[in-house]
Length: 592
Image (cartoon, rainbow, N blue to C red):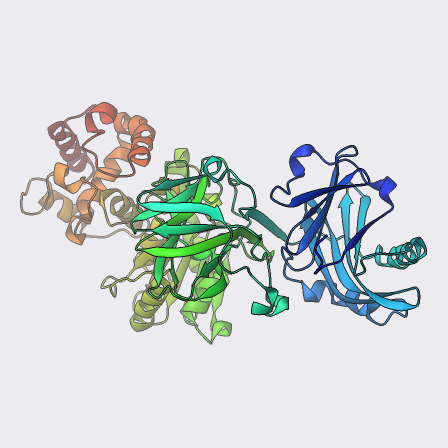
């Protein structure tokens, strides 16, 4: 065994161990040694016991792959045993291992009247206990084994509460890198031993989580290249996880920083989450990327429930090592979606208590102005959402992306600051909005105007954007479909007295209208053409022939990742541009 550890593994109540399926026995890459019908596999800081006949595998880990302790939840347990005459417990953690949940503990116990260090792991398998003790002596007499087994019987009463999940994806201890990873561009990725192994002394031991293993991958990138898992390797549902972490090692002679993107993609690689990370340290360092602060790619709105691949894209040259990529779920209040508290922390930094929040299954409104009737606005927006639900039921409810959020700043200045600060939190940048409302990353924003009150029309307009984005699965770029729908519902709930005059004046005027081939090309449209996009949407929703074709049209738009009508006009709507224009004019004359 590893002379630095000197661990002897003892099974307590082995008869209660139930078999585990073969696919749960995953410790490839460790050195295997046969002993008494079992195999002990040894890592740099871990040991595991495998018994092929009985089908169970148990791992003892000294430093790596330990979830952060939930001190509040287990504090009472620690105190309970800390002052015990026979056993002193210095650390207790909830833990998940091999899909079993249980308790990890470490401390010291009296053995043969002498204190001795131990590590302890108890896992629950359908109510039965799998108990393992790792003892800090190279040898242990049977009497001592019986004694520690008796002492640890009391620790077994530690409740096997559900553990915080830490799903370890890759530590590169398994050979055959090409079976699980693929590369793109001028990049070399090779599994090997880093020039410097990770040592716990490099970092406070309490902060060592999922630390690097023996092997890692060396990445030598020329820039504009990347490497990714192959399809189906990662778990598809990331919604419950709050972050992804990975360890990076850089030699001291590497001077220039490396800028890379952490990416999580759907089966269509254009639909992805990503976040920029600058690697500029030397030695080993752990990077953690909160999933809820990853941006959407340009190919469409991705879903955390449909992840198919994961990888790294290198924007420029780099020479580094990557190891131990881990998905983490350590806080039950967090996940992959932005929370209300996230928005409040940016809207009211240092003054979160001033936030007024109205939350329902239809909308979350965040404001701080006392004058706004937040409940009245919430009831109003529920009616708006119900109307959208009724008209566009075929698009689904978008719940997987969370409840639409509307942030109302107290002033125009604070509204602009929120938009720029929110973009910065996403590692992005936007120009200061000139409009009265703005929707960024699905969060709708505006500001309080006492002259327009709590039911201001722009609140409705931006809220509709927030409702539509996850359903259409295209970001709002100010094109005809998004602005047409938002304006349609805005005018439906906030009638505008001069809209008939605007429409009648525009339908036959080259100066006041834009040819549909240009208006509907998928690019941003000017605000003075919102009326035209709105009336086109009105026709699509109300004209029977177009209404019947609307689901197929929206499906084609989602498939192409663009609202450009040119490719689908004839195949889906069965119209030429002139026929569409003639139908639109007839519709406007009849209704307006």
